[in-house]
Image (cartoon, rainbow, N blue to C red; front, side):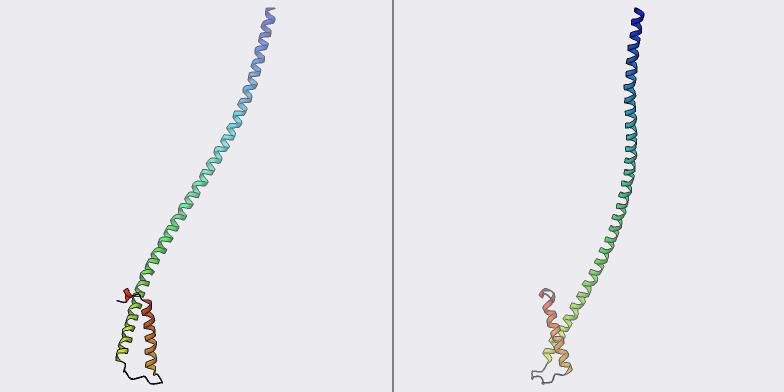
Length: 145
């Protein structure tokens, strides 16, 4: 009887060991599957990180190129602004000289009425006078002084 009880106890322990082995086997398979999934995720993450680093490097290069381009255009615009200001000053001087010439011509003109047929000199003088008057209207009073 004791032999039978020992055999039954051994059978129960053997069945418990087999059951526990099945449970552990399932857990190990799940863990291996998770490990494979984790490895795949890590590989994908590394690839995405590399791609992002290349994109950031490309963006930095684009920003550098844009900065150079804008700096060059700004320098060119400043140069043209200075040249344009010089040309405006030169034009203002020419207009002022023409105005002085017209004023001198007005002062030197005889008081007698003009002849009905204007000469070429009179036509040129009238055109210069009109030009000077238009120029004086465009120049502010502070610049004309």
